[in-house]
Amino acid sequence: MSVHTEVKKVTTHTLQRMKINGEKIAMITAYDYSFAKIFDSAGIDVILVGDSASNVMAGHETTLPITLDQMIYHASSVIRGTNHCFVVVDLPFGSYQSNSKEALASAIRIMKETGAHAVKVEGGEEILESVKRILAAGVPVMGHLGLTPQSIYKFGTYTVRAREEAEAEKLKKDARLLQEAGCFGLVLEKIPALLAKEVSESLLIPTIGIGAGQYCDGQVLVMHDLLGINTAFKPRFLRRYLDLHQQITGAIQHYIQDVKARDFPNDSEQY
Ligand code: KIV
Image (cartoon, rainbow, N blue to C red; front, top):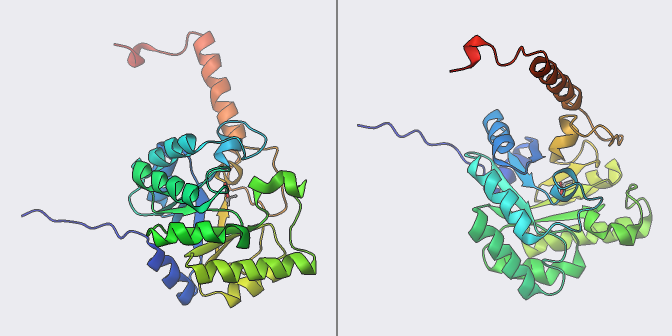
């Protein structure tokens, strides 16, 4: 008789229950198999295959250049490394803004070709029709309000959003509309903590903050920032848990030294 041990998978229901129970949700970005496997084994609740891949994986200045095909490559690699966590994939710029039919086609490609569990889109009222069409096809959708990097050329800067009354009111309305449409969660990026508190308390669905303070129902960070791979990026909201840049530099310098000194490989490291 074989013993079947079932891994408890995180679903949209799990995330909803966590909000109800006051249990914070931990989310991180990942873009490849190996890191996704480590994060999943460590017990992360949600992995976001963010279009920040455009910055941290491809070296672009903004998230705009990354394509749907490239997101599919990253997302399918992440999915192969995960077993327990919920995986959300960003719909990249240009894959959902034109019309709702294109949005649905892009979401379907993500779901069919990667095995991911949900998609994320940036914006509120202006993309509501697309959000509803994707949801009607049975694909879970996560919203993203506040600083939305795909609109960086409209904003002109990466500073805190929705400090002004009018923008805060629009954000609250957009949050309500996304919840009513059926989104299972909402990323709030770089907005005042008290606004994020008000939004989080007024919604039934969980909010996940990045630079949006302590009152969100969960937090998300870009893995390269959290692990200290990217040292140039130092916003106030970032807590670094490692200095991998320094550790990797040290390890590589050590390796170079060993090769040059004919120390590597030694007798026991060859056939
Ligand atoms: O692309 C990304 O990494 C994101 C997070 C910053 C939320 O959208």
